[in-house]
Image (cartoon, helix red, strand yellow):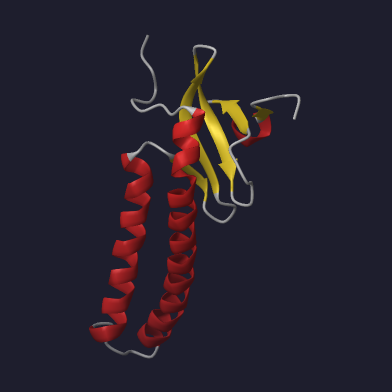
Length: 131
């Protein structure tokens, strides 16, 4: 059978990555704010007919490169960043022989949910229903 993902995580493997994922999300959030501020600055300079080169453009480009680098950390591991603002992340996994996602959202202490590949967040189910 052909699987959609090459990399699949056990609960323990995904759980072990949560400290890194939390850090990447914090950095992405900071860079997103920085880029938004720099976009306003660049737009104002452009509207005023100023040169867009120099330090302003350099800071913007460095932030874009850092943002892209963090997104590549997720992609390289086949971890799905579904919603940056919510910090919603899916880890490809197997449950009962089915390819699914282990689902985690910023603010959750641990990975407690999963959903199939098609249903998304709305189809989240507890890994241990009795909790």
